[in-house]
Amino acid sequence: MNRVIINGDDYGMNERNTRAIAEAIERGLITDTTMMANGEYFDEALALAKEKGFIDKIGIHLNLTDFPPLTEDIAKQPRFVKDGHFYKGYNRTKRLTKEEKDAIRQELTAQVEKLRSAGIPINHADSHHHIHTGIFVAPIAAEVCKKYGINKIRLHRNLGQISFLKRIVKKKYNDWLVRQGFVTTDYFAYVMDIDGVPIPDNTEIMVHPDYDKDGVLIDRRGMENGFPVGKPLIDLRDDKDIILRGFTEL
Figure 1: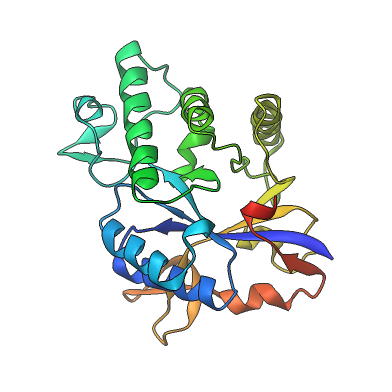
Figure 2: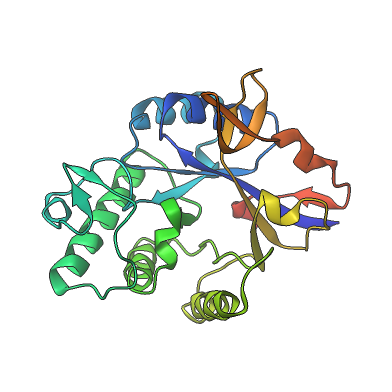
């Protein structure tokens, strides 16, 4: 039986996805989730996790691309923040200035501390729009995680259709994580990467739980006519050769 972690990203982002994640954990459709410290539904998500008893299944979803930041210095960096909000389109290939590095370190630290202060042990780390894998942000994210004893981190995607050059870059990052002393799965994939093919042992699958127009729990892959669309989460359990485990068992 191949061991698989299914993580629901964006816990605390908004009401609908937060409730979808909580239900998916309750029903055993996902094993873990990662929480956005600056998500608009943070307080309600925290209360729901305590009520449902899955506080130990929560990691941190480091964020530099959405919602208002928690700290002041990063808000002064126009490369990352516009009109008081992070935005997705910053240039990830451009070197960071010392001021930007310091501001990112301060912001990611504040995000970790917010979860810890709320009583969340933080069992692993990943990030919104995969910012923790960026060549210039990665060392800072790793530094902050080490500072707080967060030793389990999501890999760069290494399953599915990936170009030769990107595969080399992703492998370099994944090998670097291991050299830094972090514990990782062997593989990381989106749902589309494992559709119709066997899932390798020790794999993390990323999902974005949501409800479609009929109220079915799905991995949201887009929107049609104002409603989320995607693969039903229950379909991920159809592979009889997998056993679900959480990050605490990694």
